[in-house]
Length: 115
Image (cartoon, rainbow, N blue to C red; front, side, top):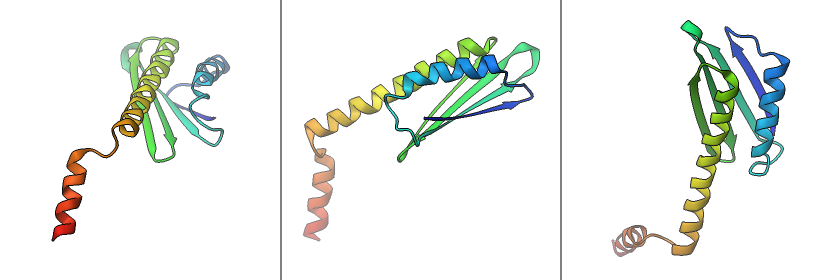
């Protein structure tokens, strides 16, 4: 996975970059190498920072954002949120494969064919 880091009103240091790369490596098992992960760090007022993560994979976009005092805990929280979204997607796909086409879709198709 390719990593794109952007800092708005904040400098992305080597320590932040290496920590982010290390945490994002956990998500490599879900995505291929051509996937791009955009991470934006924004410095807000009164010591607060905002961290946003966007991963576009095939036709799905995974978004997560975190307002935090510490960038490192914010990055960890983002990775956890993205993993949760991935688990939810996987569970929905497995459920669709097991149950097949929902009954509402088949009823609509039958009505369209009759007309």
